[in-house]
Every structure is written in C-alpha cells, then in structure tokens.
Image (cartoon, rainbow, N blue to C red; front, side, top):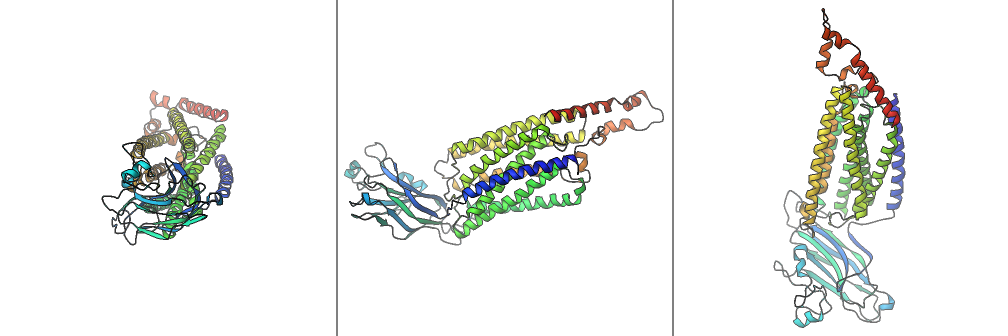
Length: 523
C-alpha cells in the first residue's frame, strides 16, 4: 500500500469516527421526539393575536377528490379533513363561569380576506366587536367571517362552549369534504379574555386523493423515485469501471465512490420516507432522520471532495500536508450546522409550509458554504498555475474542464437563489404550493449533474494512473504531443534537437517538484 493510500485511509477513518459520534448524539436527542404526520395537538396553548386567541391547527395543499392531472396525483380516493377527539381543557381555577364559543375555522387561502373585518375602516379584527355587532354583520364574541362567492358553505366554522364548572369541552367527530383544490388552513380560536389556560388536545387527519402525503410534498415522492433510479444508473457505470480497473484506482476515485454510495442511500431513504408517510399518515421519524443524516454526510463529503480535488489531492500532491486538520475541522463544522438545520426543517414536519427554519440555523450553513466555495476557487487557481508551470498538459486539460463546470454550477446556483428569493417573497401565503417542490428538487439535480461531470472526468480506466500523483519528475505522459515530437531520433542531430535533449526541462521539472514538496511540508 502506498503512502498516499495509507494517508487517505487514516483521514477517512478519523472523519468516520467523528461523524459517527455526532450521529449517535443526534440520534439519542431526536429519539425523544415522536411526531405524527397526522396533525396532533398535545396540550397546545392559545396565543393572543390581535383581539383573538389562536392555535394554528395546520396548513396543507389538498387536491379535490375528482382531481385527475396526471402530472401530480391520480384521483383514486376522497379528500377530506377529519376532526377526531378534539377537546379543549381549562383549569379548575377558571371554571366558575360559562364561556363564549371556542371555534374551529377552516378556509382556503384565497378566501383569507373573508375572515376578520373592521368597523368604519378602522383596524382589522378577527373577533366581532361591539361596533360591528351594532352594524349587524356578526355576533359579538364570535369569529368574523363572510361566505365565499364560489361556495357559500365556506369558510367552515363551528365551535363549542364551556358550561359553569365544566373543565372539558369536546368537538363532535366531523369530516369536511374537499371539493376544490387549494391550500387549506385550520385555526382554533376564541374571543373570551376570561378563558385563560385553555389547551387543545386531539388530532385532525388531512387526506389527499392518493394518500396522506401533503399536496406540496406529493410530487417529491415521485421525484426521489426518479433520482434513486438515476443514482443506480450512475452507480452501475462507476462500479463496473471500478471493478474492471481496480488496480489503477487512486485515492480521489475512492472519494468519488463514497459520494455515489451515500447518494444512493440518501435518495432511497427519502423515497421510503415519503412512501411510508403517504401510506400510513404517520411520518416515520426514524427513516426521516436517516434520510437527513445520509444526505448531510453526502453533502459534507461532496464539499470536501471538491475542495481536495481543487487542492490537487492525489493528482498534484500525495497528501494535503498541514491542511488536513483544517479540512477536517471545516467538514465537521459544516456537517453539524447542516444536520441541525435539516432535522429542524424535516423531522416531524407535517404542514405544507415552505421551509421556515430559524435564521440563526440558516446563517451558519450559508456562511460556511460561501467560505468553502471561495477556498475551492482559490485552491483551483493555485493548482492550475502549478500544472501550467510543470507542463502537465493532460492534467491541466482535465482541471480546466473541471473549473469550467464548477463555474457554471456556481453561476446557475446564484441565479436560482435569486429566483428562490423572488418566489418566496411573492408567495407569502403559499398560493403557489403546487410548484414549490421544484425548489428543493433543483438543488438535488444540480448536485447530481456536477457529480456526473466529475465521474466523467475521473472515471477509472486503464490510464487512470496517468492522472494520479507520481514521484517521477519527468512526467512524460503529461506532456503534449508537440513536446514529445521534439525528441524523435534523428540521424543528423541539429542544434534544435540537441537543445531539446539537454537536461534543462528536466531540471525545471525537478525544481517544481521539489518546491511542491516543500510547500506540502510547510503547510
């Protein structure tokens, strides 16, 4: 085993042990959280908003039962929102009076202006005020709502009240049939300021025609199925080449193999996560955690592979030298920040709201990503200059193609980020939920495309070692054909030919190699 392979195995072992320890801690923490995809309410407390007290019961895109657009969901069942064992509890301390209504209101996002109102153009209120009651538009102490012009039975509003000394008020079991495709919202509300310490318990079940998967997430199940197939095809190509030319494999190709393997596991776990979610109505926490974790590990390893390729690892230099510890530190930090962000955004997520992770979780990932990209291009510049100076033309050509592909990916990423910001800024109420799945899907496709480019450039072959690091200072295989023609034998050597045979190019190559070795030592 060569020194570079030994170093790579040692580096991989340290990285694996660190990631395994972090994963164990995350698993122990998240195993305490059990969230169902069916919207469950376990003692949620009402929060004051304006003149009302509110608990958000859920938001999902739901297709109508007769929906038959082949592009998203087939119609093979009913669509509904079902209330099961919804109870409101209050403490003994505040039970000595009869209360106003505690109501549930279900409305489609386009009808949001039908909820709430104001008297004489004043401040908008959700609960009916004395002034509005005098105008006869509502009953004081109840939720203000007006019937929809499309369907007078919407919004759906119903409620219960507490009698004197009564601690529990219960909704009767009820199903609301969905006959129109849209983004539906459920809120529990009351307008009685005397109702303090009231809690909601029970659950609601939201169903689409093809299953329990929320409408915005439904296309992603099919997408992850296609991505799993794409990774299988890429894996078959790569592993067949790997098996044929395993004697010619060098450390960089081992790293690419690891990324492909992690990608196959990630896509498979995401597909099974959504399939189980759709079938049972209960989101499988364990599968979600594994999907998130495999994805985060793959993303971290992919970033580090790009960085190591840019530094010339396994191609221009046998090791990373003193940079190894810095690369590991950046990788571990990026993994932790990304893992926490993805867990918060995905584990237990049941509503069709777009990602709303807290700002302090998004910022570290974005800053680390920007830092790694800058480091990659800075290292690429140094590597290209080194290859140019050492006249390694074959390797230089590959690195130029890699640089162009990476530059295109960065430019496309910046453009897509701008579009994503525009999309979210103009979709405050998730009215464009049917197209929202494209945003996370794009990043998967871009990452896969860049991986395919890397696989095409560094695929195992009978000439693989031509692209690997070599201690041979002459590097004759890396010189272009024009240089090699100058050393063809001649019966009458001319001055030009003799000059080409002089040791000056070799000395320059040796000098460059020695300086490169010294750089590795100092770093």
